Image (cartoon, rainbow, N blue to C red):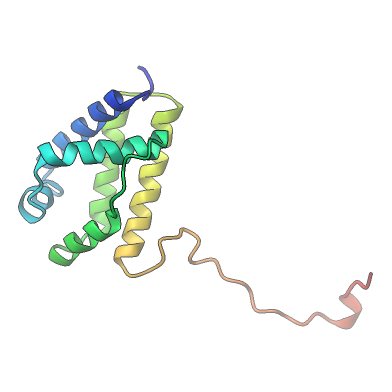
Length: 147
């Protein structure tokens, strides 16, 4: 199998993914009945998005979070939805492409899904949001090093 190399490859991946997502019993109704997505209109936008993510093409200039917030208000999106999205995305990749860019597409999709889920829950998009500083503890005087 070849690796993702250009927009034509991205279009093949994105088209294959959306065919599977539209047919999926969990995700399909969200795309077709809730979002009422016009796939012909949506595919070039998603190609712009993924071409930008994978190849820094600077083609996508929309606010993906805002669009998902509107959708989430109509139909709450859960971890189950994002997990299924990732499963279908990875299947679409694995069935068509192999290599460093394909692996990068999986990593980026995982990061995007996790960040989006956190943001929809009203939290920070950062994967590091749960890291906190330990309270400062006063060390005994004899344990300090004076330089």
